[in-house]
Image 1 (tube, rainbow, N blue to C red):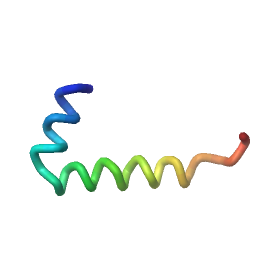
Image 2 (cartoon, rainbow, N blue to C red; image 1 turned 90 degrees about the vertical axis):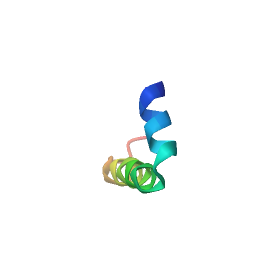
Image 3 (cartoon, rainbow, N blue to C red; image 1 turned 30 degrees about the vertical axis):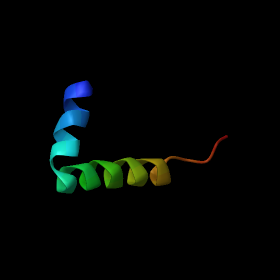
Length: 33
């Protein structure tokens, strides 16, 4: 995971993509809590 973070910080575009994917995943998750 550390390597991934380093790679993402190295390229802002990849970092934004990862963040967007995380956000979309959280948005698609059903609100059971």
